[in-house]
Length: 406
Image (cartoon, rainbow, N blue to C red; front, side, top):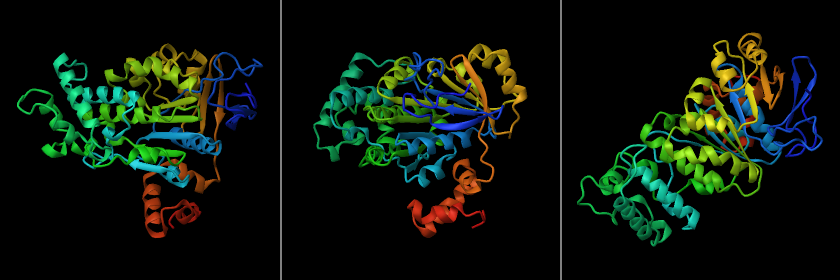
């Protein structure tokens, strides 16, 4: 296969890769059929799944694609892990927000405009905050109390809207009611989780409306059972608001953990279709194939990704890759045995077509430092930004210097 050079959903191929036969391969996220003059039935579907263990080259390849998409003018939102793409996001002039346990996030959903869509989101979000368990349903009375409190809060001026004010509209005498369960999220009650949503002003919405690339480090969220689902629910709502027909790509590292909550079941079923219609693309990455397949929500989403990339993995199992992801015996053999870790090779599978490609950036040491996400390079980047200034033009030339110790 040679891919499709022109006539893809977003025009020319995103990049040119080299195959294992040393021939060119025109790669795009959208799964255009090169044998069909019109691109085939899935030519407008760009949802992509990327699987590879630590050290396989997955992060470098993702960073490379982010840079290629930035040149095409695509808006990109990145849910990052271990700050792997922080250097790249900052080098591209984007915003990067590390979300750390106990540190105010800048989230305040109650300051969103009171549109019908936002109000419905806020109702669901509040129910998540006070539910006794992830699969629990609130009583009719509890839902009515929350809705009334929300109406009262939304009647306030936007700067006055926050969870501590919403709490004032609830019955404080019920020790087992929604007031008691919401109090832990509120600064007025010295709640342990007030840092998540009870912030004086929302600083995330304006950041998402500015640069083309915005990254969130969600490493701490992934491990926080209580905070993860409502925080992800809010961020996904904000990203959904960006789906206005522009080219939008949302990258999610370890996405199966982000979406590990019953609240995302409807998103799993309908989200990929809605995004496709609105010119959006989901790019989903993981180290663990089995964890994705063990999650019904994640498995439903992956089934809707016509483009799949597999990096070398000598621990790959046939059950996961053949039965779970639909690889052929030959393709599985390539991933498990033929492709060597460190070879910069990977399997690209789109529909019934597959090809082994290589991304060899040997000699591009400065560029590799930007997209590799190594901890020492992240520290060096922060040191240079502190010394020279935060704009890419201030620190990036020195960072790209071949002397890695500079």
